Length: 190
Image (cartoon, rainbow, N blue to C red):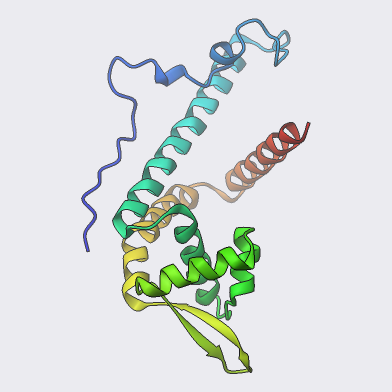
C-alpha cells in the first residue's frame, strides 16, 4: 500500500504563521513572561525555537492524521496498535490489561476496542502459553506492514536529524524537551 497523502511542512506563502509562537505574538505586554533581562537576540532566537516547535507539532498532527486515514482507524485504535507492535518488537507479550493501562481506559472500553480491531482483521487474541486463561494480543502481518509503511516511515524520518547531532547536542535537546514537558505539565496542574 502506498500512501498518497502529502503533508505541507511550511506555512503557505503570505500567511502569518511563521511568527505564531513568538513571545511577542503570545505575550505582547509581558503579562505571562518577564523578558526585561532578555536581549533582542535572545527574544528572536527563543521566538524561532518556539516557532520550530510549533511547526514540528503541526507536521506531527498532519502525519498522525495521514496515518489514521491510511489505516482507516481512530486515534485510540492507532495508539493501541502502536503499543502492541512496539512491545512485541521488544519480545514482550501484550495482554488486554496492559493495553488498558497504557491507553488509560477501562477494561470494558478495551474489550470494545479489541473487538473492533479483531473484527477488522488488525489483531488476534491468542491464548497465553504460560497461562491458558489469559490472552496475548498480536497484530496481523497485514496491519504490521501497513503501520511500517505509514507510522514507521515517519518515525524513521525523525531518526536522521537525531543521528546528525553530536552526543553533546543530543543531550542538550533531550534536556530541553524533558524540561519543556515538565514545565508544561506543572503549568497544567496549577
